[in-house]
Picture 1: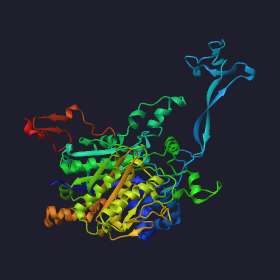
Picture 2: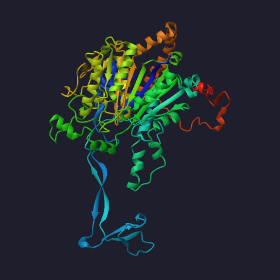
Picture 3: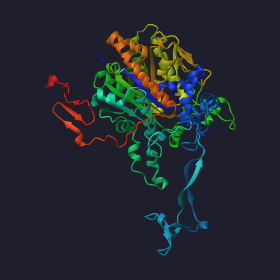
Picture 4: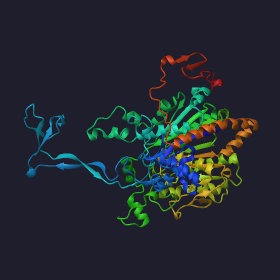
Length: 639
């Protein structure tokens, strides 16, 4: 019997805030929460944004004044809400009204005379460009007199305004690099350290006790980014350095690699010696990595897997690339949609409008990580069970005209994911026991192609009124991490019972397929236990399609009771009580601004003398569990 991959921890950071303990999810539905829940969410955001901190003498505002938290949260409520989710671009990463660029200009002398100028001896090009002549200068003179007979091409430093001024940004004032010695790490890797630490801390189980229980080769990490690291500390700086008259650093190339989130987790967060194999699949990257993780657990080769992605794409160069493709919701397009004049500000907070009249997607940054155990280990350690991953299906598009256009592969993955869900919960009334987290980018192509896919599946199962939502309306498109945002939001639905609606639109576009569907334009309150599964869909550039079937906590508990028996589950629940205490203790610390980011640089480094190999096993210094060398022979009939 295949082992069930259960979600025992999750964490991260996106425009809604910290993911663990459902804080980010609650920001999406904060208008439907009780005052107590809302206050907890706002408190976590206020400390994250640097608006509130807990000192030795009580709570203080950003100026160090002692405040009463409840009243102060009410006073800054609008500031908290305005500093989260999709909003107008802030200038913490770059100034959207002062984006530097070089304009090429050809200079020539007056009246066809040679162009004359002085240049520092240190700045003199070597070899000299064609057409340059240097007049004689003394060795002590730093200024060199240059004559240029031809036109001189130069680049002038200029600035321009961004055509796109909306994005899903991390909460205002939050800098992930502030919580560990970030040492000029690219922003994506800073997000990785924060997000993976949040996921591990959310377990309520000490990581060392997991390492003491599970052999090192049975732990794996599958994590990646899509673009790699495109800011100046990564590939952005590597590619720009010479053009800017600088030299690249020794770190920019390696830290820019797309697999670096996994490498950082292995080397500096977990000390992982086990499986490692990041996948990159454009906007479906998270689900491709999740598929690798659950395969390891289902097959029994691994017992613990961390899966996730980090993406920090808010760089001027990437904005330029997508604008050139016509893919982003620019200010001009938003004004045109809403019938505004050029002097009126566009609706930046409503830039992403899935399944409505829209003009393009909205880029965003995010890191999301989930921790998977096999079912036996989860019971053994008393881990929380937030849900279970039933299956993940991936498919390419086959022959197609445009590499960027949608194809037929997503029909296959959606249909298979629904079939896998029906295998577990049955066909009866399946449309009211599941809901869909659509990819929902906010582009005209997506609204027609994806709605048709989901509608076709609904009709195949005789579904009427299948709930469909798209959370990019709040968060924007986080590229590699998009499905991770969808997953952690779905876990929140099972905890609180509210499916976030697509509140950035009032009506569906005329070309959206609706047969069998209920595309939610408002929040939908549901009975959490009645929603037994979610279908999470991702459509990646180039034809990277993926769809996941994820089971609810109640469904997972039912399956585990059938497999292990009521007595085993009763004993598990007793162990789980201690886990909950530690989880709530971490959440209390995190809400006070103490996130315990894990970053072990230069600690517990293993050398050649730390490895002891025998015929039967390998022992590693510091690990209680040895690594078995009793490797199965998969080809006995050939020997």
